[in-house]
Length: 299
Image (cartoon, rainbow, N blue to C red):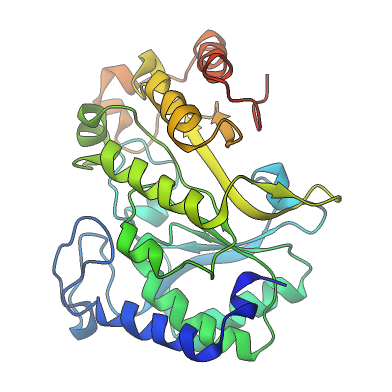
């Protein structure tokens, strides 16, 4: 049984109501852009009152503990509160390809994925749609949703918003994209990314702790962190792994990702215009091991 099933329905409704009210002068994410999304204005994320979804499907290419035998039930939200120049899903995150959906429709997507045998409901890029997700979850619980929810974000999350999710999301899977603010600002237009990302991950860990995997190899609760290796060490991996090992937990499950390749606007930046090398990836994994991290590493 997922955590939200153990929460009184009235509290879940109150959380949704509080979150929705934050759309009036939007401060759902750390940008606090102030758009009145309840009245049709779009925020920095290029999103308004309704959730917008690109696709929903069982996904078998996520982190192994999420996939199991039935897949991770991914719901790809469109728009983003980051503007990564190398985004591999830029058609969804930046060009916002998808369709607006009601809370009822979003709830029905969750139920469809659960009935299809998925182990969890995995919201991809949920940061700017937390109010709409909570609104839909109220309806989904009435439809007997019971699998864990996964919060799969870019790490640029508001601690205040995350606190509304305490006792609701069982699994957090944020990115820890950068160890320096200069790279975050240049490549993702994310001021103070490192401070915000670190505070968010600490709050996530406070809520759910290290990753717990059942006897079938499927995650049921906890924190997974992803870190994409960039060319020339631009992600400053050493600071990311130091933070995770020393300030979060040496038991943090970390996926050091090797799939960087230039796309979207990356070719406008010579330093990002090539894939990473095997040596660069191996060095990043070695940094993680040297920091005391071991769970999730693949080399």
